[in-house]
Amino acid sequence: MLCVIVLCGCSSNLSFEAKDVYQLTVTDYERTHVFQTIEDAVVIKELVDSLNRAQTVSTAAMDLVLPLNRVVFLNQQGEVLLELGYYDDETLTLNGVTGRYWDSKRDLFYGSSYELPS
Image (tube, rainbow, N blue to C red):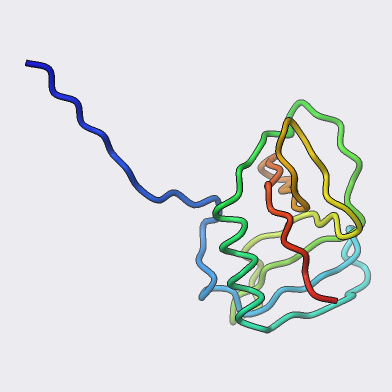
């Protein structure tokens, strides 16, 4: 008798939930100038949910144009949860995945076109 077990589950791209994020800071890529601080829980949840649902593509073997900006995810204590490059002026398409966010530490490009409010 052949038995097949199918496991279905939710996976997420991020190691934290929206409730863990207190603030988003948008800076230039080198983090020398802060352009925007976002504490709106709705915006934070929408972005985190979008990134968690997004397709990802490895950028390990790609030459990318660096984004002009960076989004820093901070918790209530001001600790950095994540930093992502942010292509705010346009979306990129890499290997069929279109998005705005790049994790340089993990070499991952996120297929999320979520645009932060200005």
